[in-house]
Image (tube, rainbow, N blue to C red):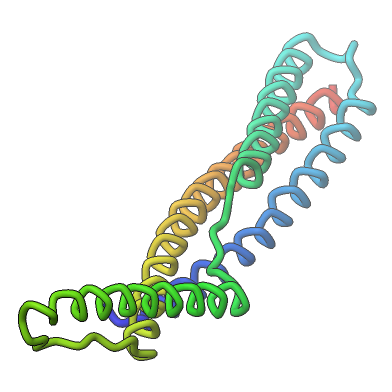
Length: 192
């Protein structure tokens, strides 16, 4: 697979990370609005009006509260326990390149010494030289490996985050339905 394609996917997963981080505002904002409405309903409910309306009101309020707790749990799970992987910085890559090049030159020197020792008995047919191209190729291979590992790890994290945000949004809808039903019970109790 082409390195540019891998790096593009890596960048896409990082962008997705930040978009998912911003998507948490919706469930939290709606949760606050619904919780405020529920508090208003609870404070103004005529508890002595009707036993049936009161039972429905409490049932719907408790159900909406449980859905709200579910929202909070999934929002927290969408933000905790994720370790995102980053590519090494340019200075780190340059240092690794220099270290590899020095190691390669050391290997070439040892190989040439060994060939010189063998040359005493048999004419040398091979002389090794250190090349910048081989070090650059090795560095490109390592960058590719870093990028593949980081992209995969970040994609798994983003998928988990998206799943939790999906369930938080679903729980918001459930909470909204139960809060609306509690509002209907509130209106019925006010009419009685």
